[in-house]
Image (cartoon, rainbow, N blue to C red):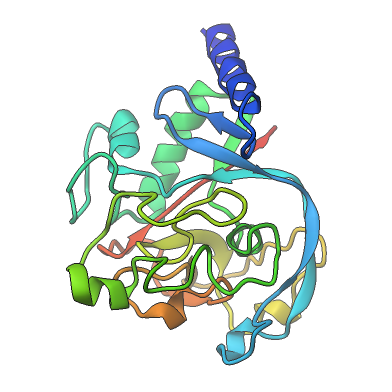
Length: 255
């Protein structure tokens, strides 16, 4: 069985190489697509000014190769493993799954890893998330075109109705990753503290400490464009909470 999964995965990756676009691995059970993000260093934080105090100081961070979800995990992908759909906006299999907390996500990840023991799936660190939002650490403010034309933020929702849109409804960023600004806030794995950037390691920082606060990134249909900036750090006090404006995407690494 594991050999079959490996061969299917290898075929999916080989097929992606035939395209001239980003290198993509497609998980065969759920269909989740992961975009390869090459290792590099970048300036993390409020490089444009006008942000919040917890986005400072701007500092250099260096990350290893990783793979990150091309889209937010969808309701169809969630149902493929969990056989349920908790979403408040249960519109279609192409809409992102919402109303999931970190315990729910841990169960989803466990079921993925049962099918792929040679790989690790997890929430991104906030450094990995920001690096991908910035299309590989570039000096860009949003994860794609600026709102309201380029993201499902409150400015767009005020005109077209509240709630999520199908993933990929707006153009991707330069890495071929969609919806990193707007649609749903996305869980990351760091513990929140306002001064985390003064404590970051240069190499692959991942802030962990005691305390209840966790982080959300990327903004949502419920918040205006200020919150959809790549550098915005939004505190969320309870990893057990579920909201209709919160979802997630995963990263994948080889063990």
